[in-house]
View: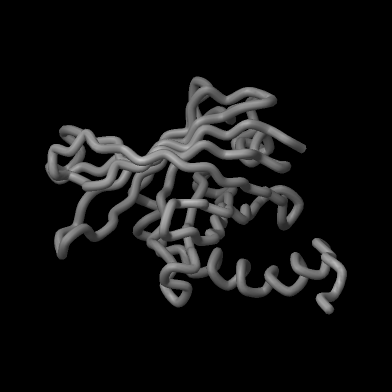
Length: 198
C-alpha cells in the first residue's frame, strides 16, 4: 500500500536538491542575458512567474525532426503542477508528458536573481534523469517572456529560445525554438498550450 500523497513532504524533500541546482547557475550565463524591467503581471520582475502557479492541462506539439526542414508534428496531452519556493524567488513545476510510445515526467526549476533582475530556467526529465539541461536565462517585458540558452543537437551547439506568450489567468503558451545560425533565424520545435484546471 502506498503512503498518502503529501505535497508538503515532497516539497521539503526536493528543496535541498532544487537549491543546489539554483546555486550552480554560471555567472557567465547570467551576464549574457538581457536585464528585464517588467513582469508578466506587473512591474516587479521577481513576481513574473506567479501567473504559472497552480494546476494545468497541457496540449503539446512537437516537431519530429529538429533543424531538418521538417513540417511533421506530433500532438499529445499532459499535465503540469507549479509551486513557489523561497518566498517567490524560485518555483518548480512537475510535468507529465504523454508522448505516444515514450511517456515521461519532467521537472522545471526557475530561480530569480534580484541583483541581475533575470530568471534562470532549468529542465530535467526521466528520459535522462542524471542530466540537467543548461539553463535558459531571461525575463519578461511587454507581457512576453523571452529566454535564451544553448543546447547540443547532433553533436553541434545550437542557440535555444523559449517564449512565454498569450499569458492570461486561465491559459498560457510556451514555445521552444532552435537556431543553427547564431540567432539570425529560428525554427520552432515545441509548443505547449496550458489551460488552468486548478
